[in-house]
Image (cartoon, rainbow, N blue to C red; front, side):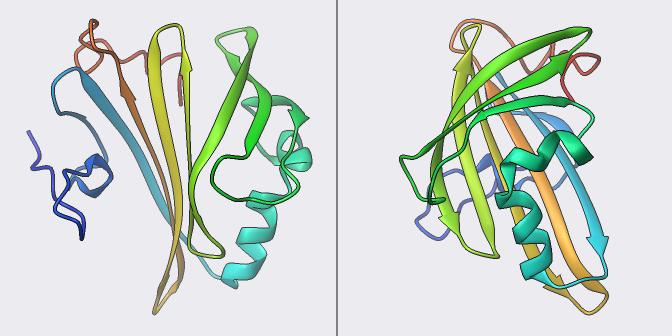
Length: 152
């Protein structure tokens, strides 16, 4: 079991775990993917914030229905993701954003609360992109039954 670190406020932050895809906290699951890309952060940020074009490069994204005028906390996105063979609609609320550094959003679907954070970190080899998702439910033990075959 990985340790869950604290952020600068001392609050437990599941995005700071030490393992890539592991159970964390009671009833929660973390799915995390990291890659280093040789390009500029502004080019990656432009791809992330051009949500209407997500279906062109993201095989899971079927459709984007609404896009915020500005990427700021409280604004919403609506899109459909392919889960197994079904296009499932999602509406997410942006909760934290810092241009060319990170964006975080949250949604609740099927009683499961999901928080996703995409962060960009400069490294000597390029820009490290980390896509971390935390799933939780107050009743279901998501950490033991995370449906990796449905959610990537």
